[in-house]
Length: 424
Image (tube, rainbow, N blue to C red; front, side):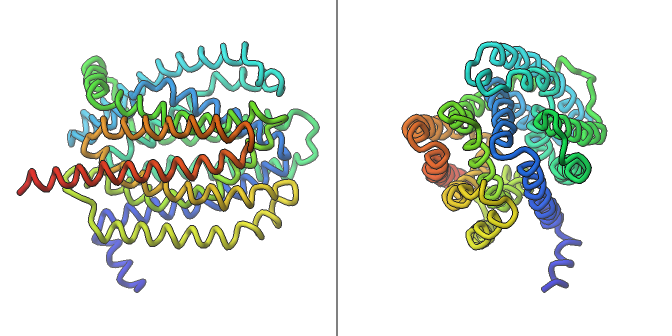
């Protein structure tokens, strides 16, 4: 068995890429979880919730204000095999990223000045000084969307892994040496997080080596694809991922403190690996999908099988894991993980089919499904979170994930039938 896998690794480039990303995720999972253990012990439940709340604000601002630029650049990269042009597209997308950063910074500044919730929870100053480095969150999106389109799986793997290794190392040192630190602990964690992300991402940028030649032409090209594809995906993402990112913020608004935000975020962190298997397989086959009429049956069965196996493992281990590593203060996370893990499985499998649709430029289908899912999330959030807090948010995750999967299956079936009929 091992000999056959090694042989497959040597001759099959796609298998090698899948194994590379899976290996990175296998390494990243314990790093992320151990990091969260250290952070929760250093900050406590409420301050950990503050950390996750601010991260949700940055992510939400990017979802609301990215205008579909990265998805448009993704489409342009998928359709080119010219390496010089690809580097120019990276440069053009990076230039547009800088402009987006200015818009997002202004929006976050006014939010910090006038939002009552963030002032009541004493987080205004923390948000204000982190705004100047909010471009880190934009770069994360830039790498995730563009590197998979250009089939640079090795660099994508490094962009996911290197910052996590650096962050884990620094907070481990922090925990061992400065555990009795009496100052603002939340500020310390944010500085370490942003600093390590910055170092890791700058390294990836240097490896991409973006070019700024023919900048006007490349920006115009990205804008063309934005009108035809990217903006449609953007409009949909405002409803789907936008309202999903809003979930943690709503928990904060209806809570006395942000501990519920932390509990919900930690449950998603523990359940998060369930999305890795379908996402990794779909990401490494993304460019390949663009020339196929359907997803290979064997590939789909392998994806479903490994995902369900991982789900069973998480259900078996979550209770003793939380009790031993996080303690009594975080016991609410156990029940939340059982619920959210189902939603994560549904979402991961839906993303798998989403990648196929995206590879075929089905922007309108993705937009329409995102509208429906987003509206469902909005209605469920408003209905459940005020009364049930983070538990209500967990049920929203399940319902929205199932709705998303059903819609992706409908659109995938429609597309695959169309592709097969057009090639008869």
